[in-house]
Every structure is written in C-alpha cells, then in structure tokens.
Image 1 (spheres, rainbow, N blue to C red):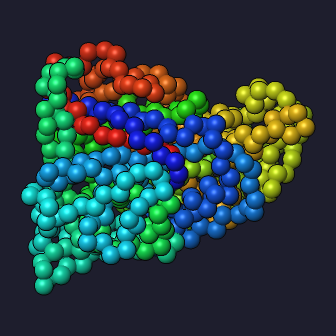
Image 2: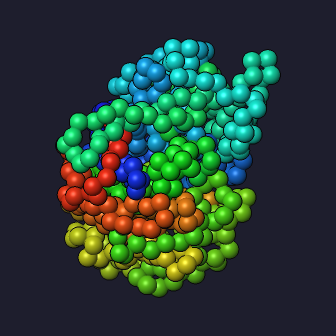
Length: 484
C-alpha cells in the first residue's frame, strides 16, 4: 500500500455548496515509462489483498517470475486537520473505510520516510477542537471492515484495532476534529476563505508489520470504502458532498487524471449494480468474451460468496482472475494472434513478440457484468510492455492467475476509463475515455436532480474550469495529491 520516490503536487478540489460537487485533479509523480518488476507489483498487491480481504480469502497467486514492465501508481493526498491545522500525507484507498493518522503517542510508528516526505503526528492535546469519541457514541458500535471496536471505561474512549492478513496492523482510538477547506464565494479567481467540517477519524498509537517500515511510511490511510465511517459517507450524510465519487486515470504519458467527489457524466457510461451487503466494491461478473466470442467459463466461478467474487479496486496495480477464467482467456488471446505474433514464455509470463501495433492484431476483451454492462478492454488495458527481444517488442498478459478466490480489477484495466462509484444508487459505472480531456461533472440538487456543473480539464501544471459553473457559492477543498 506504499511506493517510492513521491513528488508532492498541489491541487484544488471544488465543492459547489448548494449543488455539491468536488474535483480532485491527479498527477503521476513517476511517469509510466518507469519500469518495475512485476514480481514486486504482485508482492505489493498480494500484501494489500491480504489486508483488505482479511477474513475472506487468502489469495494464492500463481506465477514465478516477471518481466521488467509497467509503471505503476498509488494515490496520496495531503489533508489538514485540527486547530491549528496540521498537514498529513495519507494514502487514498478504496479497499478500506476510515481515515486514520498516526498519533504523537504512537510507540512504534516510523519516525522517518524513505518516500521523500516529512512524517507528521496528530496531537489530540495540541488541537483545541479535538474531542475523543466516548463509549456512548453510536460510532463506537459501527461496524468497520477489518476492525474490532473496543471501549475503555477507565478513560471513556472508543478504540479500534485493525489486524490484517499479512501480519500488519494498527490500533488506536477515534477522534472528532476539523477537516479544513478553502471557501471561494462566487466564481474563481476570487480569493479563498477558510472553512472546515467536523469528521471522525482514527488516531493510531501502535503499528505492526509493514506499517512500521520507513521505506513505505506515510502518515495514514484515507479510506474511500462504502462504510458509514468513510469520509465520503460522513460528508454526504450532512449534504456537503453527494454520495458518489468518480475517477478517470490516464494510461499514457505521465499518467495522472482526476478524482471527483461527485459524478462525472458521459453518455456512454454503463452501470452494473453493486452486490449488496459487501465490505468492498463487488460486482457480478457473468462472462468474458474475446472478439465478441464468449469463453467457456462456468459463471459460478464469479459468484459472490465468502471466498469468491469480483472486486473493483483502484488501489490494486494489476488485475487478477481466478484460474477457471484466466486459462481460457489466455488461450483465446493466443489463438487470435497466432498468425501475427510469436508466443513466448518470459520468466513464467505469457508474452508475445510483436513487430506491429498491438491494436492492429490483438483482440478486444469484454468483461460482461450484471445488468448488461460490458467493460471493453483494448489491448493496452490487458497487456504490459516488456521491452524488446530480437528486434521485436515484447508484450505480456497483464492479468495474473489466482488459483482460487477473488478476482480483482485493478489499475491495469481501470485506466483510460471514467469510473463512477454511485453509492446512493448502489451501482458502479464506467466508459472508455481519454482522461487527458475535460470531463463533464454533474452535481446533485437538493431534489436529487442532476444538472450540468460544467467541464473540468486537468493538465500537469494546473486545473482549468472550461465553462462557467453555476452562479452559486463554490467551496474549494485545497488538497495535495501524490501519484507514485
């Protein structure tokens, strides 16, 4: 859940106070040309999955070795909390719910980070607006995935403990305090006015496992999961933002993209219902097609249960399919390019030597979900470039084989797409899109009707609003995003 060589990037998120929306432009601090061993990516993903899927399944990922391929990205934001406000670098994570940061009383938290960031610690005594969450607060009995809640009657404070499947963990207590915003009254470029909203978050006093390591250290985790204690749920329950967020991640150049606390609108977006009562973003994957031909896969291998299902997770770098689906998919792709590409095994990975554009010879792959929604993958959304051999480009299958358990759709297949997490209507939508272009953002009125909130364009240096927003008060949430 960490990475290396981050660069802090200033961004602005815009909230429309009466019609509620927020825009978080993203940039990638490591360009996609940066190469990383797939073994390292798989190991990072596997550790993450052990944490986020604790109590569900222990993934057994098959494969031995790996090409030197693929640049990868994780998302970080810099938030201000407390009075006076203090900044914290926290990882954005759709696989968990709560926002937690390290407390100044933490006994074994890292004191420095090899990521190039200064670590900060939250001080409940030093913040004049901080309040401990008492045992009587309903939050203390709210279920949070992967966490156990406890209450110390001696000090009357609600505590938590996360124990993850990879052996790491964190524990601490819940705090209520201010999360800071910059208000812009009217349309930009009017100067901002400071404002804030009170949220509940975790203050960790003990870490274990990977969370103690300096090479991966940040100040905490910013959970974007569907639970009641996520910041999205807390803010939307008070009408500050809609109960929906979206992202569009660029898959070429220096990467980057945009995260919207609101809904990106695009006419080609298709939606599939979320599987109800799940701690993650589970969808019902029903079939897979290559060049329009359905593969011989038993739909039961995708059915959601305690140890099965399909999860959408932008924090996962690669993509993972259960073996019963992985094998026929690779066979179909190999058959489709048998006359145009040389099949080769590179360190345990299925690869191909190609002398022309992959878009000209490789087939499209369709993941077909409940509700008739198909996620169509172009070759660059399931292949990874692995350098050159004998004068030809080598491309490898990016999907990883999971012998049994949960299929996970990560950044590999989610890039170059608008993805909408519509929690209000319990569905996820997507559409192929050039994420270097402007996006249309719709915002919700008090009558739950959608109107056009304008277009937002993101570049490597600035955010540009291309058409006028509604003449209403605008709330700008100043954040810092790091993509590593």
